[in-house]
Length: 306
Image 1 (cartoon, rainbow, N blue to C red):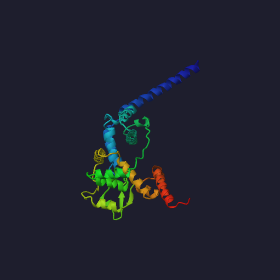
Image 2: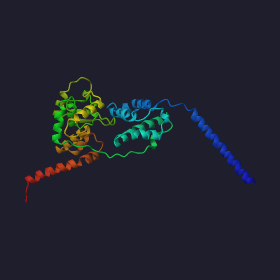
Image 3: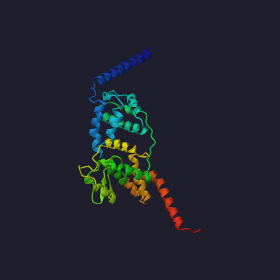
Image 4: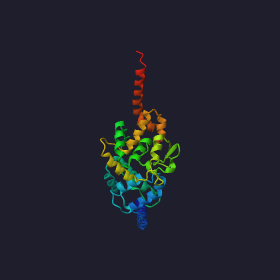
């Protein structure tokens, strides 16, 4: 009997301690200062303080994602009031899988930084469902398509930029970070937009030199444009073509033309700014095979033995 009484007493004591701990936790939570940022305010602060200083292109792509795919699709409220469901609903309004994936990364990075700085207690994005995306490498323009693009573009002020893409294989936003100081007598420095270490040096061809000499030096930037404005103008240009293409396709076209001309895969990797050789080889392996087949046909034609 005494044993039973002792057990009950111990359980009552443990229960009292648990209630006391719960009360203390609730009290601390209620006394916690309210979050000083709303989501939109924090995104602006996070972009300005932690992201923009590390992005060579001024963060055009990231700013565009924040403005178009985050702020337009979710209600602004204090940062600590967001739930996983709130984030998921906002992401569901983003149409393409790839852009939904990028937007989720933006949410996650912003909230992770807020947790690190003790602005919020938890990251609601951690439990948001992962997004799968099948990567597409784009396509190379046929030579007839390339000629048509240049003919149509020549009637617009986008022409120098289009030619620059085709002569350098630059990523869509990279030319907008190009300064006149990057252009030397025999080389041109492409300021990478992915990381601080992604800059690369390209040889300055005669065509590229002639193009740059034809552009008036009105500012420190060679192409003083806003990326969103470029996208809109290129969209209008696309409607005048008999085929469809993207700015990324112009980069892919450059890589293809290099390999068709006999430039080594290793050199193409360097010029395109790929981190490793495998990336370049995976994207352009079919081009190499087709080129080698045509070269073999030339050999067979001139060296018939049987």
